Length: 135
Image (spheres, rainbow, N blue to C red):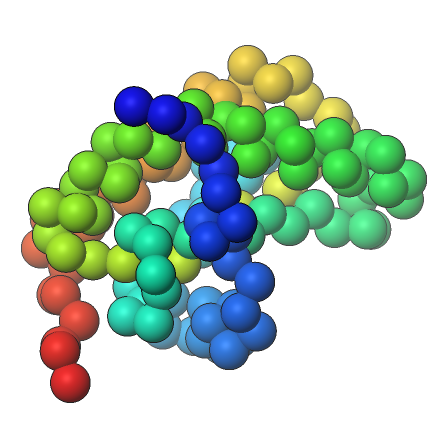
């Protein structure tokens, strides 16, 4: 299967982003990442991704962009089990990964944390999260 991160897989709809951070979403932290996720019906893909790196943590855009690139790459390489679990449950998720550390971290560290985070999401989705009602 092709591991690509296409445009529809990137969360850009303001309404969904506001819902994601307004409340009712679930979240957990695996340092240096904070994961916020919410089942959403309005998406066209199984999972849509938002990556955030604070300007307070890294003043230089070069460093912020590097961290975002590392997070997107780690997600792209490890997303398959999540997508399979979501397809099985017929769910669609909005995901946000927020970088918490003040220091740059190696890509392998981010990849390991991403694997753990995605496995945890799969466990919570499979553990009987109520499916959104079809209204």
